[in-house]
Length: 151
Image (spheres, rainbow, N blue to C red):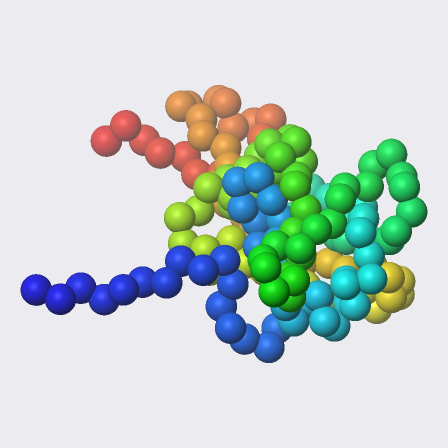
């Protein structure tokens, strides 16, 4: 019996600038690298909006305490990535996204901020990052969660 081969590439081949949230890295697809001219940068500063599930990026070459290294993500040098293990683990909704099995579910379109043209923003998805065993545990939670009853 034949079974279809399912691609597990980090990025699909399309014309939208995207990021990919992985276990240890955040990847930037070739379209994003080209549009944002990321070839000329070697650092990225990341900002998180926990309330709105957004992640923002500022690219630079200056050494800054909070900047992460930006490096080629493949031999052709068309894509970029940054190692972001601590960031991914710090935010439960980002950690949960990084664990999605389907690479397409870990990809998010990136848009340039309308006010600050050097700032790029991706709207992430709620990821049911909280698991609690009773309703009383839910009072102090913020964000999207799923309550599962035992039955």
